[in-house]
Length: 482
Image (cartoon, rainbow, N blue to C red; front, side, top):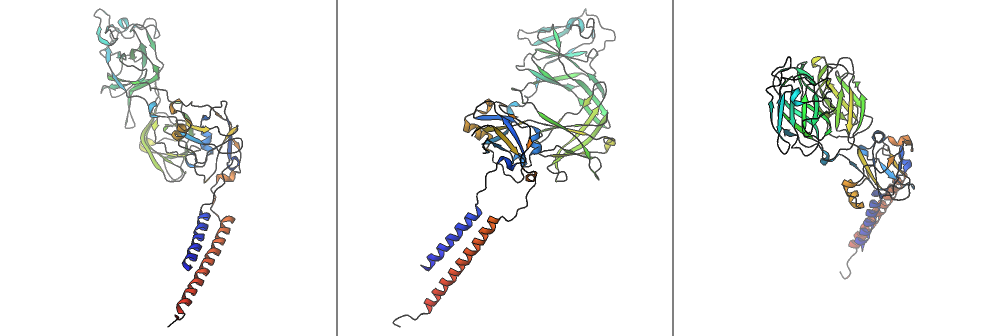
């Protein structure tokens, strides 16, 4: 009996402790967030989607949008998920090697009345081309009777590229170049045809380049253009012989499906005090950046630089990339390609420029950051209109996994529309103080619980002492019949 009473008292104490440690939190309402935005939902489909713009990231204070919520007209939270629209199936295909045929310069530049006159291989380059029944180029031979153009050289005037074996459209070409000469910079003309008779020009900002600048070797041997479906491509130097021999070529097929449009932002750098050659960029929010370009302030600049990122302006910096940045302003401007960067959702970037070659001079660079948009999916539960709330410190994420939500509502992920709803303009909703983390204090409810616990513990202790005294007094009593 005595042990049973103690066990019951301890059970009561354990129950009270459990109740104190598992107090239920009240669900958040729209007014608990600093910013609110209306959501326009023209359709009545249970699953709605919209694209998150930069204002959402700039107003959020939770890591990876953990403070984002979707509400119905009654202020109730509805299920939501976030996913990126960039998928592996949208990545560019591997380049494909394609046949290359040199066209001599014996008749180069003879294009009739001008550069826009129709191109004829026989009269312009003095060659005849034989193709197979499938359209593949079999041979390209010079015409013996074709007159040589004044100033013609042994250098190729152009190259004819056979794209007939490709099943998909082409969005670019890349070349293997000869070792000589050491330096050149020549704009290219890209023309395509399906019959080797009628050629059309393809708009492209393209150039072949090899330069030694500030002790660095810069080489550009690839061109990009809009998707083109054609059997043949002609690459020339706009009326001049090619400055270098093109040894091989690869065609870049278009993706199997178009990638979603990218979002981008541009931020001017600020010099970092006491750190020569370092510049700080504040994106205004933890954007999911996966590509970055640095615009150099001065013409004809080549520098070696290192890019870092962090979630605080003076916080712990994470190494991103070390690369060669250049801006060469000649007849055809040259600029380094954009950098692929890991998606870390950092707000701040730092560029440290090597002093080699004089650095950047007196100007400051600009960071051009871009990313694939993220898609918000939510379920239309409860009455419309719906709204988005964000901007609250110390908030845990409550969103679903996107694949799980799509599976639950029975929507195949490949058929979900990109955007069925629209975000309205942001407006202040809650007190701005919710943006700042709150130091943990002692709530009145917690004080009351601890006071109750102390009373319970004191009662259990008193009961235990009383039982212990009774047990000892019982042991001291003389045994009857002794």
